[in-house]
Length: 200
Length: 200
Image 1: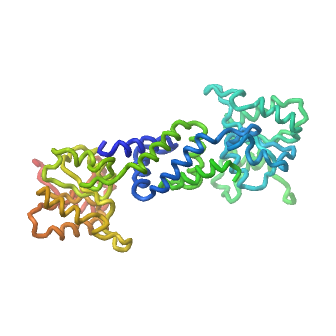
Image 2: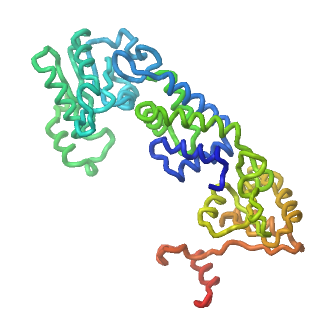
Image 3: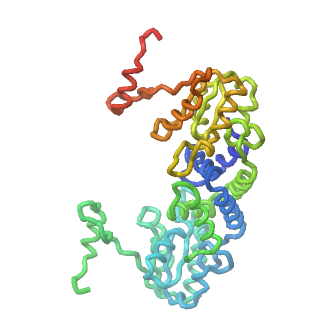
């Protein structure tokens, strides 16, 4: 290449970011070098510290700096409700909605036998242990409404069969602010079946 | 936020990359933490080294590790032809096309008085000095076909008025492989005016 080895290596390294190909990596490298050297140094420090320091929470499997994440360290959130999500970004979306105040369990994936992801890999035993120990009364299965997410939810529900735990799933329906004309048939069917009296 | 301070700082730092907002930065951080920790460490090293080590070539102003970039260090490329481009990515595009074998001068911008970018900032004196010293016979003004790029090209041409240097501009016309129906009117006009006998 026409450039210095340092620039080449920077471009190549930036390609480990998701959705970043050769052209985008070049644009990012040039931007950092031309206009944001301090930002680049800050990013390098943040990367080094996060790659070394971030671990899994011992209780909910979410990313954490210490043994327990801030949510699991909050006693008020052990209120007998546990919400199972697939990924930290799902947890974040729920936290940003701001309504739910119980605990979480982050699977960090979903069951996918073809990729070698079984119950062991997503921490099902740890989840079942926590449900027993904490006396969880409601388990909200907030896995994604995909084939794998549904299968994972059903697997967890099966494993809890006969135990005194209320198992719920998030409601399907029309997104708030959405237009009926753009909603797909499956979602509309769910919305019709889940219709409620106006007084609710 | 629900996450660890290390993850928060990583997300915030990633936003210094061009085109990366909050959601994309989150996705990148989670991807690195979940699946690409070694890539993240490599990126941190590459960033640190590039931010510290990359400087400007003393001759062409392009990014370089040493005083002269690899192109300026190659004697065969001092063949009396000099190509003026706005940015390293323009240079890279020309290098990847593979046809041009002369030298370069990278303005690292264009004249833009409203942003405080004058001839001093883009190194016009250094360019004129190089043209004199190296006995450049042809100066190819490959600035972008934008208002600022054209103005910069005209300014450089004016400064060389009366000197024995052939000044050229890249041809405008229909992109190779493009369809006529999608080409804009200005480009078509240029293509018509620049038409050539078939034998060329």
